[in-house]
Image 1 (tube, rainbow, N blue to C red):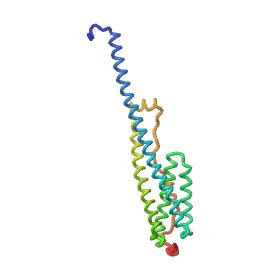
Image 2: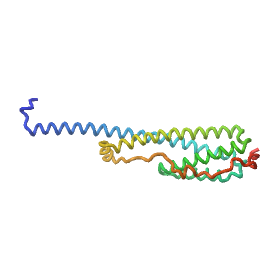
Image 3: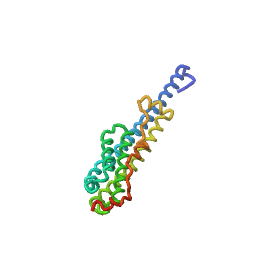
Length: 204
């Protein structure tokens, strides 16, 4: 094409068309990138929920196995029951994070009490297996939570950075909440005396 024979209007039209094509390519690329990041967050959230649900389901098995021999530990059992109720009714990421932290903390306290004060229960194969499964579940929650927060960070950075933030706004996308409990939830378990001599004979 001989550019000398083109009118100014034609040249301007070509330039505009080229710009439109470039913007379209960028828009499609940005859109796909945001969608992929969003899907990754969703998939990882499913993993978080799966491992958290596993802990939720295991707790009653341990409680039912030891509660009859631990009548004086009602505060711990009450904290566990409350945490499970909070998790069951949690609707937001923040609420689920807080309830999960409460469950993890209260179950950790129960396991510590059993190991310190109830040697007979601690040596029981079924109880020992349940405690190990719960500890493994808690470790998996920690791993999946970290991965989820990393994916959320990548997604949030993507949609707030120019010029992808323009596409994100057009898509109606906003930042996502991290799976992070507040300090109150993390320290909600009642204190117990792990050195009580009178309780060390229980569970026999």
